[in-house]
Image (spheres, one colour):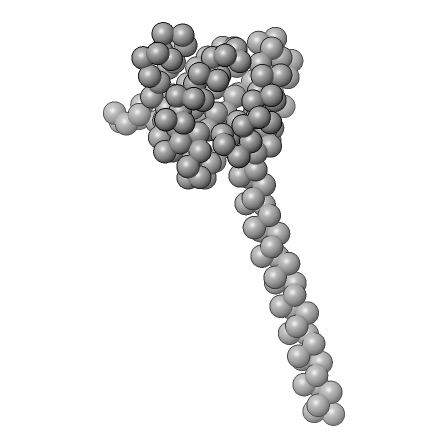
Length: 166
């Protein structure tokens, strides 16, 4: 009888261990999903997590029904596919998911937020600044965001990405 109880306890412990491992793997998968190279996001972007991976980050905040956003959509899709693994390019629909931009200050769409490969707010070179206007945000004198408001063309996006990779 004691052997049967001991055997049952061992089986229960094995089953518990298997469930614990599956739970750990699902948590890792959730973290991996947040860091995937999928274009569309449905929750606020964790900039600390994205910028910790040593890749440039571009997050475009817009809406599927917004005309300039519609114009940018094919560019974002193309560059996201082409540069997957090299640059994080994300699109956040602020009309579908109103709380998605709670960690950002701008309220006009489309707007983009940029971080360089070192995880720092992007500081455009003079060459890029001659083609694209940016807005920088600071908190207590610290540079926290570099943004662009409005539509960006493919050639502008490519120029920015090349500059952010330096």
